Amino acid sequence: MSIDFILPDIGEGIVECELVEWLVAEGEKIEEDQPIADVMTDKALVQIPAMHAGVVDKLYYQQGDIAKVHEPLFAMTPVAMTPLDGNTTSADNDSNGVGAMPETHQATSLAKQKTNEGVKGSQLLDAGLNLLESLVSDEVASDEQQIDEPLDSANMIAANEPQSAGISEDFILPDIGEGIVECEIVEWLVAEGDVIEEDQPVADVMTDKALVQIPAICAGTVVKLYYAKGDIAKVHAPLFAIAPSGNVVSHDDDNKKEKDKLPETANENHQAGIQPAITNQKSQKQQSKNQESATFAGKSSAQIASTDIAKNGKKALASPAVRRVARELDINIHQVPGSGKKGRVYKEDVIRFSEAKAEQAHAIPVQTGQPESISSKSTTVGGKRVEAIRGVKAAMAKAMVDSVTSIPHFTYCEELDLTELIALRQQLKTQYAKQDVKLTLMPFFMKAMSMALTEFPLMNTQVNDDCSEITYFEDHNIGMAVDSKVGLLVPNVKQAQTKSILELASDIARLTEQARAGRVSLKDLTGGTISISNIGAIGGTVATPIINKPEVAIVALGKVQKLPRFNENGEVEAREIMQISWSGDHRVIDGGTIARFTNAWKALLENPNQMLVNLR
Image (cartoon, rainbow, N blue to C red; front, side):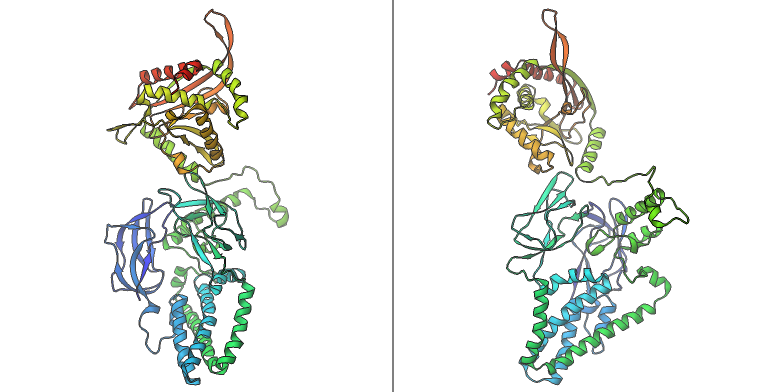
């Protein structure tokens, strides 16, 4: 039976690649780990190996085509699925890396022959085969894991428990934002074995846009968490395994049922007739192991090196390209902890392991003749720590570089006398605090800006990449930069032109709280038309803010300072002064436009009564 080979993840954030060259042809026999194709990503040339031995049935792409990650690359018939002659045994399947299901079917076929010889009657045969399949399935699955990916005894029990019980199902990480293909596990909110409810938060994950909380789709028991804290989880891949409510059976109960199942079924169906089939199955599996050992012993030293079998008998799961990187860095790939599914090692894992090894060698000097306990407690001097730039910080870095390199920025500075506005806010602050409304200066800044944008619509525009078209927006979606725990976020208040100062205050409080927690929705982060950066809330007076592309302007608010200024009579007074700094897109707006706009905005803020009179 033909199966599709699904193109796996071949690099962080890579969703497609170019088919450079097929290294096999349709109808050709291939071996496990044999190179199948060379593909080109936007980072490097990658070689795709075969997961099983078999025959290539169909190549889904032509040379030069674009292949999609997580979609079929070619079709093949594994060795275990090709027609078997009378001499073929399950040992052939094991030696070629066959999965548990084909071996179980073959064992069942052999069991039928043996059972027919010892027992007559279809009822006895069916009952015996059902028992045999239930006994063999766990053992076959366990042996397959020992061949493909050896585990210690504790991990084997954890890995086999869902299959033996037949009650768990994987939760597939869904799309969590447009264009997002992976996310970082920030924190697990549950543990293995916990009983959870439907819609209960299970994990906090970080994308390149925001912190997202993943809820449970049903009630049940958490069987396994596939990632550790800090790992990178892939969209459309299993995140955790859950046993839904109603099907939850403990492992001890399941073992007890399996133990009780044998004598009961044997008494009803004459255990003596089924025993030869079980004995035959065990001998077949032993023959499989022996043949595999003989096959491995017959390989040359070069072949053994190519399979990368470690001294402890474990086989590293990694592509040829990753193995090549490990060899170039003089790293034993079997010592590298894999971050992929089933411990698969990626290039990033090898590089991270190499850097950690180098740091350790640099930080801990060799002390000949000193006990290990004393050496490990020595103080590290001149060390360093390297962290990966991920999530929102990585997205911000990319966006800032894109903005600076593609937009010609210019800066315009002005000062605002906010003495009267601050006095008005102080009068209203206590009154509205009783209504749970936090009245800051920001709602006044936004409302005044919206009123000024009505007079100067060019400040509320966006241009396309080649600056051949300009788009005017009727809605004033004013963004505000927030320094959150996950990085800089810029949520925006939608349709500021239609809202009162109190409504703006409510939206600002909501967005600020969500942003500081890193839980702003994608809707609130997109669609902005102009931005405000309140750097003065932390400190500083003058800044040169970077435009939040594709907007055309951003203003930075400095801190309010009590400074001496002359009044109309030439007398010196203490006034509440704020410095503001504009950055504009010089492809769209010029100095005169931004100066006139700032004067209109300034007039409303310095004379709040005039702003209130003109409110709509």
